[in-house]
Length: 356
Image 1 (cartoon, helix red, strand yellow):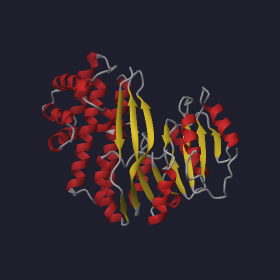
Image 2 (spheres, rainbow, N blue to C red; image 1 turned 90 degrees about the vertical axis):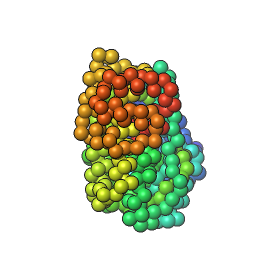
Image 3 (tube, one colour; image 1 turned 30 degrees about the vertical axis):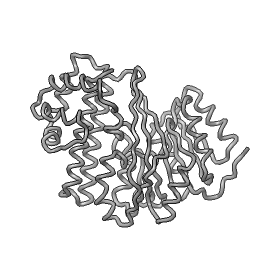
Image 4 (spheres, helix red, strand yellow; image 1 turned 120 degrees about the vertical axis):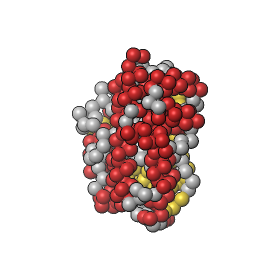
């Protein structure tokens, strides 16, 4: 049965796809089953070689709300920018090709935005990380329901949302299209790892809400070849993200806020510990001869030493690494990490936004 698409949909859902035939149908069907049906989905495929496009076309033929765009050779960020340029909705939401939504996601996000005239609504999400060999890490990322009607209130309380890993990912967030046009947010402008779009929105957003519920689910599979190149990408993402957050807090004029600065150092240490675990923990594909060298390079920076000196991370495994980091003892860190990774319950729960 075809669905009627109004002239101006309430929500424009943006999605980039590439070789996602195992997940894209569930993703799209979770949208088609939404209790709020007044949306459009703009799906941009970046040159899939599997059955992804065939599935997209089949679904779009039966549902006028779905538009499929082929953009071979585009990056994910460029594809999302292309979708954003076609968006007509009052609000914008990004959907991951390996994500799916509970039936009430759009209704709850839009309901909160409309009730309090919000420019941005932050929803929670459930993250599943699947490592080579099938090891799974799961985390529920959410915070208490809240409304920040004033810019000052949001900025003062944002550190708690960053600490939970809730603010930076694009997923499960509703953006006013008027906000996006005002701040000029684009996916392909800024950092390489996907958070620049949200950071552009956070810079001067005034009215923000936190849904307080997790209505979105995403699964990330760590690559089978999680060797030195993958570790390097994780570490650069950590370093770039920390630099970007420092810049955001400078823009906000909160460089002297104690709670915010402690959050930034805690985040850095927690993400650094996760990079170290990917390097030399259980299931690592980094050659043993390279592990100590890579860890030494990570911990011998001024940024790592400052963070290890002042941070108070919540995770016991991370706290156990502070002393050897301060002592520049890469060998001990590698040994401790191998042991801790055997009992550490969840890599995802420690630093969810390192992977989303």
